Length: 401
Image 1 (cartoon, rainbow, N blue to C red):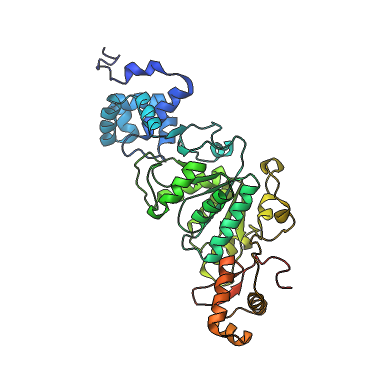
Image 2 (image 1 turned 90 degrees about the horizontal axis):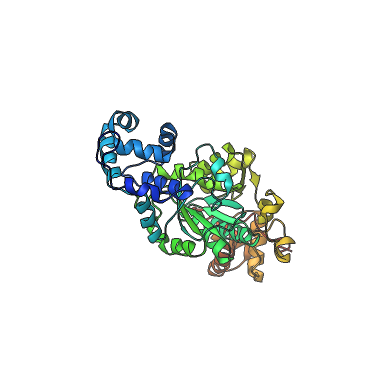
């Protein structure tokens, strides 16, 4: 039958009456997001101008002057053709068959604080499990080219948050992000990866196994539709969601131009807690974190520093006695040999190279190197790009006595 404008009805028209309420809204939002070259940045604005998702879909389907004024002539023509042959309900069902959910603003599948940010997403695509209701989130982010010290810190902080019943949010990138996700999962926690690409796109490719693990035990979120390839501008824009989901953002290693600082800026704009892990003075990957601390970010020396800033109800499980009695110790003492303890004491006096430590300790360089490697892996010592070894700020109390 022709519509009121004299045009033939599209196949989608006949399906509109078959679903109501949130499912109806979900279908139209999903179908809009799946339009070719639809920008998640523009979609909320266009929905607002049209009066809603269904109204925008109808406007685009009809085409004409209003659609052209809203999106331009080329897109108006292309989207009108796509809308006329697309059933929004069918779009939603196809996503469901691929294991992809669509989360609407205000739904409890993610923390409600996300939908209160300045520019919330029009919807989120999700894979994996639903987040336990009422679970609080903390973001742990940082450098992609992280040091062994930074990776160890991220894993330990994330594990501590998981043990406290807090979900760990990050961006699934190499380095600190990957270690945060991994540390949380190893502790049996719930982790959330927010992507800067389509929900089904594996990026970076080397994290395919990690993403599969997150989808199995946690969840993956993206405002970008399936198949959307990663682009440089999408990652800073994605960071507002990482910050928006979280009650606090913890930065572990960051250069002065790190994308993690963008996440911290978003967190500050939304009134969230910003914290930073200290590191060796003068190291390029501590420039960003030390600058945050100078500007007022809380200095993190242990997971308790994070948990004590969260509302009491956000910490669902108390830490065990080992952690609770060791404030200021992210890194746990895995046992040190007499030579390792000697090296730690020397580094407590001043940083040094392998040769310098060998001379001061009176031991062969190969013996010192073995001990240093062990200490770096335990997280008690960090090494900069110039081969200088220094004491980690996360040394457990009593280890040098």
